[in-house]
Image (tube, rainbow, N blue to C red):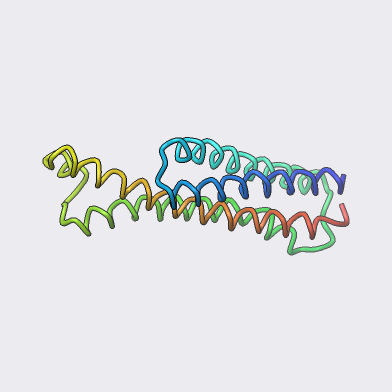
Length: 152
């Protein structure tokens, strides 16, 4: 059972690390294809983190516990990180609007087409930066979970 928990933790780490790297590339280069790939990989990584949390909860409900209590922190904290990152993502969009003196998203429609695209690209780039950072943090936490998943 220990090997399965370690394997799932490493899968979560890999998915999120790949998502984080692709997100960093998308943020840096601003390429649309990297951006699309990033969002797909990010959601896969988040799904893998949820799978790990459900597996850990199921094991605990069945009476199988890790000898290291830090394991539970590392296994469950990625959900909190993803939740906070989604909140920061929403705030980051408003920050871009505020920088440009726009009251809300509907005010973007009043801009010229080129300016609209610039605002949307700035929002997307900032959102990718926030979410790519969160994916890298989740990858680190999942790797630590794999390292502390002994004793099941």
